[in-house]
Length: 420
Image (tube, rainbow, N blue to C red; front, side, top):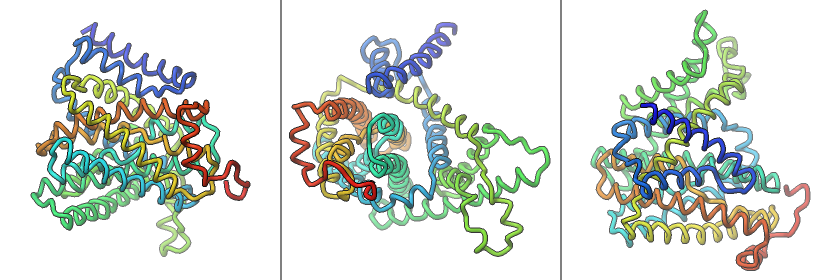
């Protein structure tokens, strides 16, 4: 027992140390956590995925809930509106191109059923905010490029989860046709969102009307779990309900109450529902979950399956090529050439992809294990390649910079203040 507690403490301490390493070297901490998992798992054989037992399944669900809720409380609708056009162009184009490329390669390389191959694409179609945001904070980007990358990492996590959950729901009901999947996605998005919004209003009422109500991050987290359970009981997406609850709390004060009748009643909601302390609490909680998952992910990578390793590497390379073309043709020419180069290489996959990749196996989806293992490999390679290419672009390495200059020659070297 003492050895286990020592190991847990050491891993958490190293995780914070890796954050400091990232600030100095630009090597993402999550990449180092995965390497740590590989070291103690496949290399040294100290830990096996089976050692986690059922804890892994429960932790997957908890992580999904907390990740989405934390993403929701940090999603400012006003900021989304300011750069919505550019974000939508890049995020949706990149997501669709990624799904098509990965889906085709999953079907061609691993002989996955078409819906499962597409699911692999939807799982890996976004970018990781856990990797992207720390990097862009250290790069000299224009305001527009920064906001597009920031919002893309937040929105595509949601998009990946919504679409993947829709496909999985189709599997659970035995209906995997395009119409059934789209219908399930719409139902999950709308009806689960209603549960989340109503939950946010109910939470605001309780903390205002019930004297001595224990308002704390823990009680808020418990309420998120309740909403998740209610949504799942009604056969809607508990994950989306958790996200909608977070967005509602974060943006409730911005609702145009003057246009709504019964102003006295609705004025209860016209103030901030999330404090900075609560945001910090959930940020730390996500950080702890991130430690567990990326170490667990490293432990779970099976290096004996060379087809999965090589297939994952090939998928990663193709994804970066597709991303470069998306930025070249979808991003408006209101950012500098160097901004465009940075945007082209910032497509790491991360925690949301790792969590989602384990769900099909739990649901018994055919080909789920190959899907999971391939996704884990792509997460590892994509983070490593992102770190390498960002460094090479920043240093104007002769290996990539001349090629990027030609590819993004349509972008200006500088932009006016009005364009930023």
